[in-house]
Length: 141
Image (cartoon, rainbow, N blue to C red; front, side, top):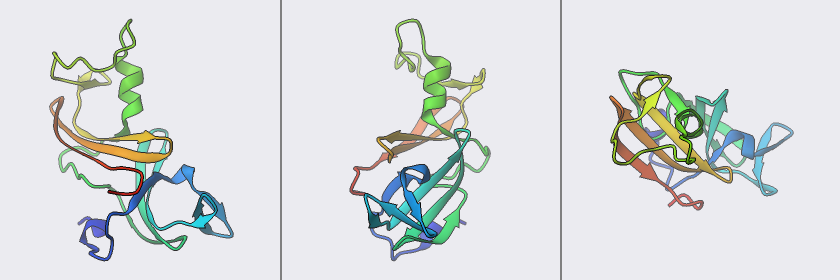
């Protein structure tokens, strides 16, 4: 069960990489202000946990962000695919091809894309196809 999605007290939370936050005395800050929102903890470019943080303190954690892929535990930073599939022109995704691969296999799982420390979007992939995606602005909307 996704505990974060079930918590109806959260309304359009800001989403950031955990490493983007500053930790002081066990509390998390964003730009010198106690952080409230969701922090995505990536380790070796794989999503480890998503933490709900309220006034700088972790209040809830989950294994997934917005999307949960039941048949695959793969949860990776989209940069991994960009690095792996980049062609000689620097393009990483061929929109005419429709399918995307990861480590030689059709991509199955969830990808996360970041811009300047903020989560820009999540995408759900099944058999190499992006079947669902969602994105956010830096204010959480």
